[in-house]
Length: 335
Ligand code: UT7
Image (cartoon, rainbow, N blue to C red; front, side, top):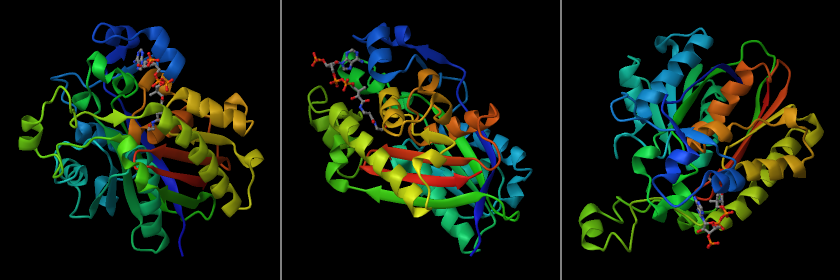
């Protein structure tokens, strides 16, 4: 059995900064409400004509990760691409990345686990490396939320939270013997699937049906979230899956050097920090400037934390996520 290690990280966010005051001009909300309830001060949105899409942002993040791993696209054996906002209904974004980056005809796997997408994607890539099937896997989380949100007052409970961006990691066979991914832990509970969902367009809510139904009343083509319900489950599942990962490795909360939680809501991160009694320097948050970028949030935060020197060799790094599905998971890494 081999072990895997993160050998390169990169992220990309669009240049266009959208502040809470900008959103207040579009809907009945305020900077004070958004900051108090979510922690978000601003987020990035793709601007028409800036050339970005989910896959383009993914490629921009991936190129940085590859360069830092000192690899070329030819070295990559597989792509695992997590997104809930692909450029096309099908095929998924993985093949677009393969095409744009001029890669060999390697497998391109799309992961659809929303906010837990990156954790699921890392876990999948880790299994392929452990078995010896692949040596270098490109793992990406990328989202274009702004293209599909309701920016009227009707959608304010959802649309103020989310932002666009991409993050990428290269997972490689660990030849050094030092550090690497210790374990991954994944879960789901489909009975809550509609509590955070986008029903259509899909084969259940196909375009003619959406047109036939009154779109003002029934709006299955915008994301729906029962915020308080999701919040209550998130804080329980985040805590459980972090504990589960630590216990599987005979570690405790005191061993954590850096916790990178999915950036769902600053209040959720603060709840976990308090519960585990973590000092500020052992948890990384950037939702304040990027919002919740779903599958991209963990790789963006991980890259930033690493770039700023907050993660050092030998550190115990914990990634944890919770989101639509419900799905949740954790990754325990010795850096
Ligand atoms: O990333 C995947 C997982 N996602 C999450 O974990 C998100 C979890 N949930 C949340 O982050 C929070 O529940 C929200 C930020 C979505 C909402 O915060 P909340 O404190 O739970 O507010 P609420 O939904 O209970 O709404 C409180 C009030 C309501 O008004 P009334 O009924 O009390 O008159 C809402 O209509 O705030 C109102 N409201 C807003 N007001 C101003 C909802 N959205 C807004 C808004 N601006 N954008």
